[in-house]
Length: 260
Ligand code: COA
Image 1 (tube, rainbow, N blue to C red):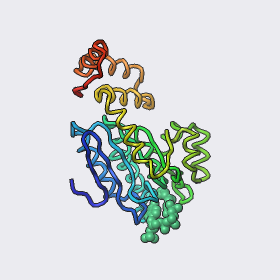
Image 2: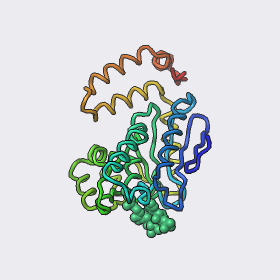
Image 3: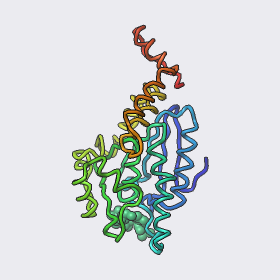
Image 4: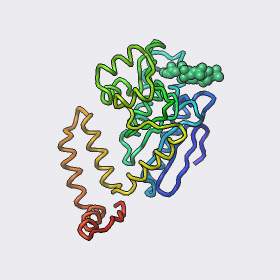
């Protein structure tokens, strides 16, 4: 895969996607969003990949937001399309990916950058990271799912305050309010990400994809999450991974999941 604004590397079962516009603090322009979609789609089709890490290049930013220079002159209709197409193409797409995606927040995660991190399955951050949704300071609101996913993660009151003040919080505050799961030094961030990915990769990838669907169903109005859980639970009983997992337990050995 050849991309202009992102880097994609794979190492055995682990993939890393790096947004690579450090001079623009990795701001998300149209091309970057399209390339990210293409990369995630290809990685999901690659049966070797069990975990994807998403990060930003350089030491300053994960992503400093949607690229303001691209939408500054948009009309109402163009604004709606920007949000709708971005949500469908990237943010909802990542959230519903069958492979776990971890946001590795290595610096500023602002606006669309925080929204991107929030569409990942969970987040870890370096201690220099700053997070926020500054859109109202530009006269706009978050449009890539931020008004929905931030309250899911931190609660309504905290989300309202962050959005209304357009303020930034530190990594330590983000850890306190549940926005990120772990904080470490910038130096140790990659190894922490790989350590967590390693723990995930030991488990059944088929079961994990079922769990992603069931957990996500909790946040969808149109479906009953308990029903989705029952369905996904039942499906596991027809998988080779389930046979291997239960057999290995009974034989007192570590499972070697075929991922099917
Ligand atoms: N869109 C487009 N360009 C952006 C950007 C964004 N969201 N965020 C940063 N950049 C660009 C800057 O314009 C600058 O480009 P230039 O060197 O060609 O002038 C470059 O990235 C470096 O940013 P700069 O502002 O000089 O760095 P800083 O260290 O002084 O400030 C921030 C860092 C993150 C506080 C500041 O860049 C910022 O506020 N960015 C916008 C954040 C935002 O509002 N995001 C939500 C968008 S909806």
